Image 1: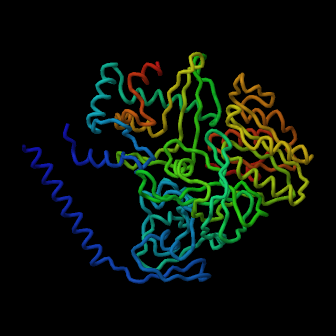
Image 2 (image 1 turned 90 degrees about the vertical axis):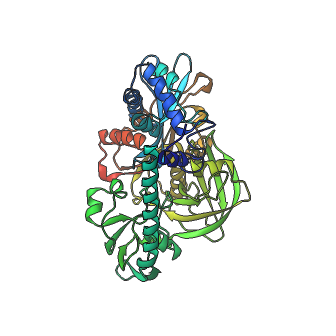
Image 3 (image 1 turned 135 degrees about the horizontal axis):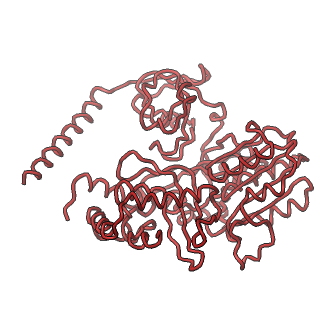
Length: 150
Length: 363
């Protein structure tokens, strides 16, 4: 699919070495527009909105923020750990948003299964419907994420 | 087709306008030589206008801390510009509180030099120097923390608790050079070398460089020392609380105080999740065994059965609450993530410690 100049410019900012060491697109061979449309279709099919997913993620991160660098219970099944690092990272969509360098790890205490996300992930899902490219360190498969958050 | 023509027209006009702006900047925005008056005449620089204040000062060997290379994403390069800076930019707003805005604090990376400036910078910035160092030793401390020993090309004088900035080199697909700040963990009585603790930030440009590309024997450029996180009052004892790489400045402070024979009570709490996140534990415990006034209390919030951990369990706040009963004569020194520090401040205040004697360095 052909992309607009704006999308090309954003895609360029997502390349390895621009804002992060390995970039936002991983090994995904699709372009940014194709990634966005595919993930949007998954979210639509599951009857949710980007905002609902981001709100849920933020609520879990907020629990972890009560004491960072520690394991805190979310409920009987899940535990959360939020790690913070110095500084901020700008959103590659060039919307002037700067996310704290903060990562959340949500873990199922019984099975050990886990998902992790950054504050920037939450923003990019909420505002841009972007879950990152396949193979990216912070890629969140929307179907898996939604099932995990349920 | 119509949409294509519209997009092409808009793109074309934008490109032409951008080119015109660049040409006009080169032709008409020749600011000539501008003077920078520092600290009311204490130092005066003549620089070519057009560059940022941060880079102009660096070219004159005055190194203002900056971790983002001038992108206005770290907020570290603050200084006061009393005259000549122009209006505050939207990129600066998020990093300045009301008091700072009122006293003309600016991000020096965002101030473009267009005319003569009057600025105020802390005196200690004049002591900051560039060091060409050799990586003498890299020691893995945990799964995500490495300790680097840098042999310096000239002696350094620093206060325990201060930090250095590391300059990266291009690697892999990373073409830009960045600077990042790391605390010194070594004793200030060592002048020919510094030790820095570097915790890997997932996807971080500098920590990936440090962890994956820097090897023993490499030449690495540092600047420093920076920072005002150091104990002022040696007449008091301290409750020190650290998390993660926040243990680095605490180690330097403890070594310094013990070497100087300060006999006040010092409690050092170190919070981690599991045993694999702990480091310096045996070393600090040995110091505690030798010095009756130094108490070391590591605590694990998520100890695993296989850790066989017999020490403090639970949140670091709970460990502090259990182990410090009387805070009389004690000050607070905290270094770690903002979330940890905020929670610890509440515990210390609950015990009666007042804000004015709680010092912290949030990273």
